[in-house]
Each structure stands twice: as structure tokens, then as C-alpha cells.
Image 1: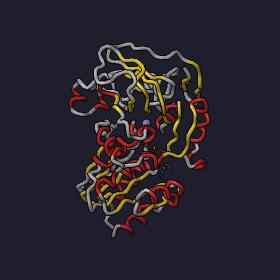
Image 2: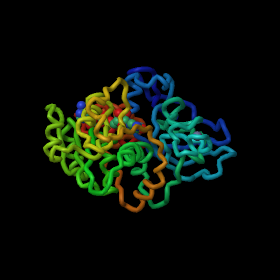
Image 3: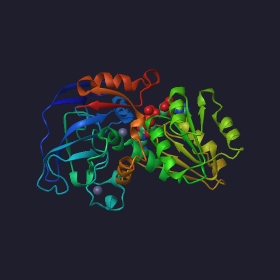
Image 4: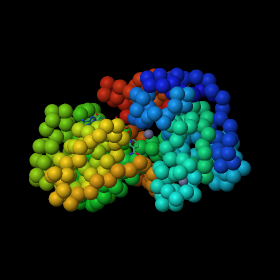
Length: 345
Ligand SMILES: NC(=O)c1ccc[n+]([C@@H]2O[C@H](COP(=O)([O-])OP(=O)(O)OC[C@H]3O[C@@H](n4cnc5c(N)ncnc54)[C@H](O)[C@@H]3O)[C@@H](O)[C@H]2O)c1
Ligand SMILES: [Zn+2]
Ligand SMILES: [Zn+2]
């Protein structure tokens, strides 16, 4: 089968690999219909993720058809159409029983990281019963590719952790796919204001179209001043960090209102200053989270009921044969205006 294989920092290739086989009774083999590329795949290619060893097939998102099941799989049958979660969960360990699937003692984020992933014609899914979701017949499968990772991430790490509420004010720093998925799911709760902050005018325009009440281009260094002017000098009830660098977390520290919450989503690779000398008296909360995907069933129902349209974030389509070109396009988003690129296997 064709597969996109990581070969160490800066190196990847599309090559022939054997079709995976069942190696535990709880496994399923899924024939991929559609997959995509995540910012995290780019992090791996930069060498930021040493857990991913050279030789691993990348990708942790996608939809497909069950091709084979192990003897211990009871929730699915061959031929079922399924949504693949970016987080693998055995459903049994202490963390899974608390709904913290991302910290599953036997799973977590392993797909396209410590085991072969979804950017291929087939993928092996461990603990299939608790790591796959059946796709209802009347749902657009392409939309669901965005439910593998970015929508649960924006909703759980940003909206739920950030305690977004009716009438409240929200700032989302970073208008990439994750920030935009946060913007769409924040609107489940009707906040009064959602201010999107980014340095890319194209992405800010998209944000405006998708429901942001205001946007701030932060490239001139005046984001704090502009946001304070918009909020009567108070700041926002919820400041969501969706970039993953010190500058944007520091911005959240400056714009959070007394009593507010900073909800961090970004993956940070370097240390970030916490300004307790100012914030100690501000009654704020700071949350962090690795996406658990325990909201995937709710998001599936929202898409099915047409209350949520993930396809708004799809910008490009490619065939698996052209996945190297898809990486080029996704990797140069400022130039190509790429958001999520769909890859058909
Ligand atoms: N916590 C989790 O479980 C989880 C899951 C998935 C992804 N993530 C992380 O979420 C973050 C966002 O993901 P994404 O795919 O949307 O990334 P992305 O790179 O596509 O988007 C980031 C956005 O931030 C903007 N940006 C960069 N520097 C900025 C600055 N100084 N000020 C304002 N905006 C700036 C960029 O223009 C871009 O639009 C990443 O760090 C990713 O690794 C976390
Ligand atoms: Zn991802
Ligand atoms: Zn577990």
C-alpha cells in the first residue's frame, strides 16, 4: 500500500509498505477513505517530537471502512464506516475511566506518533471498540475528518476549559485550524464577543466570516492596547491560546480580565513566563489539556443535526498520490491560504 513515511527531521517520502495486519484481538484494520495533515505533523517533521521515530507512517486523523477485525472487537463489523479518533483509548485504565483518554496507560496519542498512522491506504487501530466511532449513514464523511482532532481539541481545551458562557467575552489567539474550530464551537454558548487575534489577514477574514465579532492583527505589537480599547479596559473573560509560543501565552496573560480564565491549547516547546507578580491578585484560572476526545459523540450529533459545519475549514483537496504536494501547500499556509487539506486515499 502507499504510505507517507517519516524519515527523521526534514525527511519524508511516499512509499510502498505492507498492509497492516491484526496483531491483538482488540485491533481493527481500517481502509482509509479520507485523511488530512495536522500542524502536529509539521512539528514532527521539524524534529520537535522525538517520540516519533524514523520509519513511522504519519497521520492521526481520518475516516475509513473496517476491513478486518480481531476476535475481541464487538462494537464494529467489517464494512462499517468509521471515524478514527486521534486518541487511542483502551477504555479500561484509571485515566480512561475518568474520561482522560489522552492519558490512557495503553494508548493516548500514539497514531502517527509511536505507531503507524492514517496517511496511508490502511491503518491498524488498537482498541478499536473504544477508539473508533460509527458514522451514521446520512453524515458527510469529509466533514468528519475534522472531528478526529481539531474540533474536539478546540472544544475541550479551549471552549470547555475556558468556561465560555452566554454574554461573556472571549479572545482566541491564533486563527489556524484549531483557533477556527474553537471559534465555531464557542458559538454553541452564545458569548457576547469573540475577538480573534492573528498576524495573517486572510485567516482573520475567515474568522470574521465564521462568527468573530472583531479581529485584531497583532503584527504591529499593539494587540493589548487594541483589545483593551474594545473591552472598556477590562480585558476578556476567556483568553484562549491557540498558537503555542511564549509571545501568545504572554498576550493571554495581559488580556485576561479579573476573574477570567486562560485556556491553553498550543503545544509549547520552550519555557514561558508566568507573571504572578501581576496576576496573583486577579482571581484568574489557567488550564492546560491534551485533547481527550470525550466530546466526539456530541460533535458527531451536532454535525448530523447541521448545527456545526466543519467543512467551512476545508481549503484544498488532494489524492494520496499527491500527498507531498499537499504537505507543501499546507506548510505554506500564509501564501496558499490553506486551512485543512483533505487527502483521498
Ligand atoms: N492541546 C492539544 O491537545 C492540541 C491538539 C492539537 C493541536 N494543538 C496545538 O494547537 C496549536 C494551533 O494549531 P493549528 O493547527 O491551528 O496551528 P497553525 O500553525 O495552523 O496556526 C497557528 C496560527 O497562529 C498564528 N500566529 C503565529 N504567531 C503568532 C503571533 N505571534 N501572534 C498571533 N498569531 C500568531 C499563525 O498566523 C497561525 O494562523 C499548535 O500549537 C498545535 O500544536 C494542541
Ligand atoms: Zn493533530
Ligand atoms: Zn486507558
